[in-house]
Length: 503
View 1: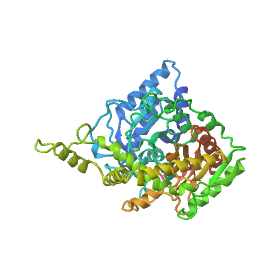
View 2: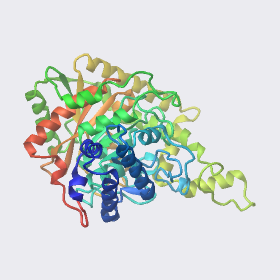
View 3: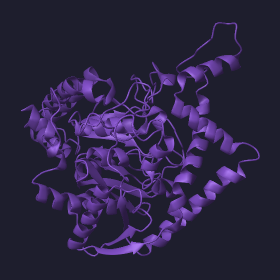
View 4: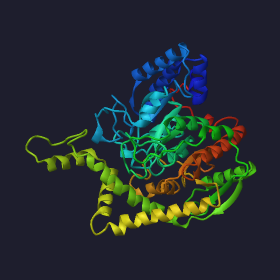
């Protein structure tokens, strides 16, 4: 019974709840049991909200019993990345700096989930303040990839993606600054969507880099992603960067999956040296599959993408150093050395020294240097010029193609500890995903099989123009339908069973 529940897609669970075939409480209990059974090994969650989740599930069941019309995902459990505030629940952003801090308000994303009667199971692990590409930089220990517990699930949203792959939750929310939804999606064989910048609200999301951050859905199916995107998307007056325009028909696109006549642009610069042979093989096969489904394949060149990583790793630390200045021991969380004998500056310094991890300190120092007088134009100013050139590359490419495609990541999931002492090697994981954040486009990662190199999942990256998020779902649905017919089920049916798992 539990296995059927845990392996079902979210839209099917919602249908069963609405039809009275199962209760939300039964489904929620099954997922809490699964968390209790496997999270000791995976460590997807930082905090579990068992009582509140069961209470929310019972409310949904009472609404159904009273004949109320339920939303498309009502009663379905969800894992929330611990970078979104939730009233009365801890929010740490994976940092000791915020340990013990309980939010007095809901992020807009959180509020919209609650308003849609989605049951929040708890908060998931991440690299500290979403800085990292492996979820090894969490102050609370790493998350492990359910496909192979010796490997990372990617970062920074590894907890959300691992929760899906470990069948601890059928839905999850992540945030994507340079690939933090798409890279974990690729590493765990799940679906990860970065909506158009401004398409989902950042209000109540603990900021890393304000011009890059974007909340988005993480799921096990394309339709589930569209339904969840529909719930959290749309204009929010509390976020000054929120786009005041209707969300495209993403659910219709996910149900259609018709890509006949769509022009698909293969980005010449995102492949070749540095890409694992198994990743490139699956990418080529997927492009051929799209062509067989009626798409027209063209090659496009985006010459300034070669500079995206350098620009990104100047802009992100610069904005992070500014955003994290608020964590000064005076207003939030941790305070160290406040014995009455030390100055305010000494307490700030001691708190930041004790509260921030090494990766966060590294990026704050880089960002502060890039913004300093005398170096601003040479570093931050130049990076912003590159950002403009990358946006122009996208505009030119989208005149030739409706969507652009590449591998999601150059390699499959790497082993825990393999790159932790080599930040540049770690940063290279974001090679394919950062251009979309710099330009503000919509993009996604979809699972397209296992690499013949190591039998680990491979992701297929799709990029669409801003506010054309529906194109992502058309491509994703077409791939999912065709590949699952070939495989005889979803890719996650092949994942090894975790010890103690009910799935």
